[in-house]
Image 1 (cartoon, one colour):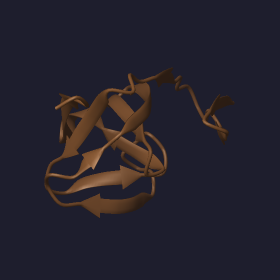
Image 2 (spheres, helix red, strand yellow; image 1 turned 45 degrees about the vertical axis):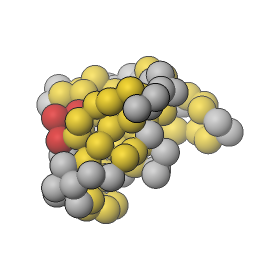
Image 3 (cartoon, rainbow, N blue to C red; image 1 turned 90 degrees about the horizontal axis):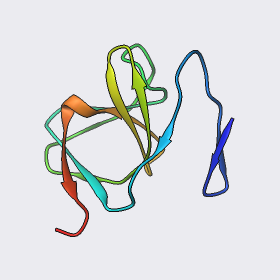
Image 4 (tube, helix red, strand yellow; image 1 turned 180 degrees about the horizontal axis):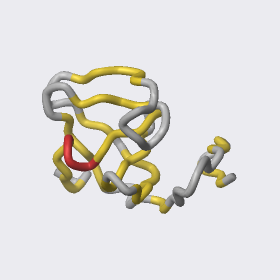
Length: 88
């Protein structure tokens, strides 16, 4: 388990997590999917339109790429969002 802001996330399988910079913001592209776990077979919690800013608090480097855990309570894969500095 790891703890972040009074929330415990269970580390499942073989993935690890790193805390993101609080200044990082990722912007969704059309069809970006928020998933329960950092993998493409995980349950889809929400599908976003383009242009929604999300705030990552952790990352996970998986076989299929880098994933961001966002404050909305799920994971998005880095290749379906655009990164920008939170001081924009």
